[in-house]
Length: 134
Image (cartoon, rainbow, N blue to C red):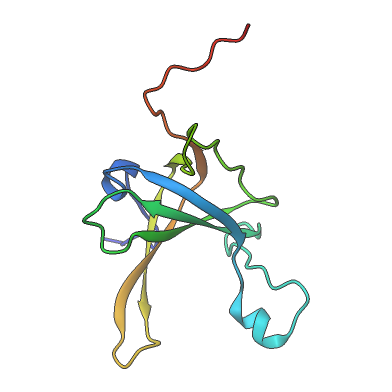
């Protein structure tokens, strides 16, 4: 049996209480940074597209980390969903969510970690009725 390097998961399993986008930034390729190259943005190994890091607030109060990053690819950064009126929050749903396990060997003892990837990002259905155009 082959174990996939990227494991598909449901959004609801990763963010059971929902998620809010904080910002989108270019993901750096640290080898390019060390080499002093002009374009240090990471590229996807599969398709060569630019990698964007979406900073996300996990709404689950029991979450191990309140802020996580979800990586997405594309030549332009993904569009941010609108803020909820009267709040600084941008509720979001990620489609095509993948867990990518890896070993973090930067500490005294290596440990198992994972990163998140998504193929698309869209506004969450907040239960509010959309405004009717006049």
